[in-house]
Length: 568
View: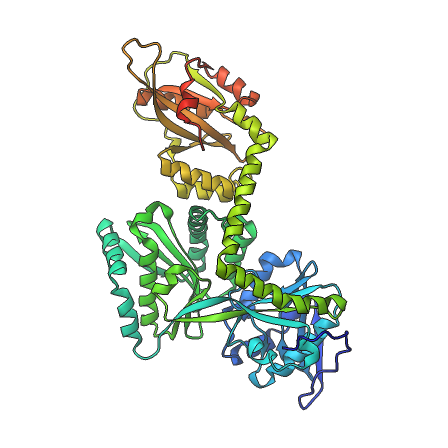
C-alpha cells in the first residue's frame, strides 16, 4: 500500500472491458428492487456470496432500518447489462454496506473475471459523490471479491484506502468423512454429559420450524431468551429495540422458510428452552442467532442445541457449519478453522484524507500494541474506577446515600384471616417473564434494570407479577428475620418486605397500585410475616397510597440500615 503524502488528484476514467463501463449511484430503493434479475444472477454466479448479499435478505433489512438511511449504491453497467453492484448506504457522513449492522459478511456483487474493474468503477463513482467523510466497509471475508481484487486497484485509489484485519470467523469445515468429524464432537464427554442430564430431566424434543406462522409465533421466545442471556453477560440485547424485532419478522416473510431460514427449537416437556435462528445457504449452515433460557442454565441447553444442529448438518450432507464472526471461547471446542475478517476504510479526496491515510495505520498498530500489552484493559479498569468514584461523590448520589434506606411502613389495619390461596392474578415471575415485560414496556424496564433484577433473583429475592383490570405491576419481595424490641423473650420477627415496585405501561397513574398492596397484605399474612413496605423518602405519591391502604410508619425499622436489606 502506498503511504506517500500526495496532493489530491483527478481520478482517471475506469478501465473498459470490451465495452463502455458506466457506473451510477442509485438512491431509490425501488430502483434497486427493479434490478432483481441482475442481482440474483450476480449473487448466484459468485461462489463466495452469502445469504447476507441476497436480495430477499436486503429487502428484510431495509424494511426495518432503511427509513432513517440514505441509499447510495453504485451500480456498474457495461452497455445495458448490469455487471456489478456495491450495496452501500449513508448514515450522516458515514458510508457503509447495506445490511450493517446485521450482516455477518459483506461483499460486492460481480462476476469473478470482472471484479477488479467493477470495484474500480464503483469506487470512482463513490469518490465523486458529495456528503460523506468516511466509508467504512466492515465484515469482509478473506475470500470475498472485494478483499481479493481491491489489492490490484490503481494507485490513485489505493492511496485513499486502508485495509486491516479486525476480527475473525470460525467454522467447522466438513471435509473428508463428515460423519466421523461430527461424531467425534458429539461424543465429547462434556457434551454427552449435558445431553444425558437434560434427557433424564424430562422429555426432550428438537425440531425445525418450516411454517411462517410458526416462526412468527416463536420469535418472541427467541427475543426473550436473548434479552435474558445478554443481561447475564452485563450487556444490552439488540432485541430491546423494536427495529431489530421487526427485522427478524421481516426475514421470516422474505426468505424461504424451508430451504433458507433454519429456525430450530429445543423443548423440555413442551417448554422451549433453546432457539436458533440461522440460515442454510450454498451447502453451509450459518449459526446466526443461537440462544437459550437462562432459567435452565444448569441443564446446558445451549450445548444440547448445538449438538442437534451438528447432527442436522450431517443429515443434510452440508460442507460447513459456519459459526460466523467473533472470538467467543466456546467456538474453539466445535470448530476446526479460523480465518481473518477485514475492514476497509476509504476517505474522500481532500487534504484531510492524506492526513488520515498516514496516521490511521499508526493508530491501528498502536491499538494492537496496547491490546497485546494489557494496557488497554488496565486503562479501561481505571476509567471505570474513576467513573464509580465520581458517581459516589456526585451530589445526587450523596443525597441518595444520606436518605438510604428510605421510609418503612408496616401494615396495622386488622383483617380477617385469609385463605391459603393467594389471588390467582398474582404469580411469581421468572427471569424469562421479566425479559418479556422488557419488550412490552421498554420505558419501565431497560437493560440496566434487567441486570439489577437478575442479581436480585440470584440473591434469593422474589418477583411477583400482579395483573388487574386497569394496570399491570411488578413487586419485589424479600423475607427478613429482624429483632423484635417489643418481645421480652427476644423472639425474632419475620418480615415480608416489599422494597421495590413498578406500575408498567401507564406512567400517569400512581407508582404503586392498591391491587399490589392488597395482594401483598394477603401474601404476608399467609406467610405468617409482618407486611412492610419501603419507599423512597421523597416519593410522596406512594406515601399517600400506602397510608390509605392501612400502612403506618414503622418506628422499629432501624434494623433496615444495619442489615442493608435494601441494597440492590
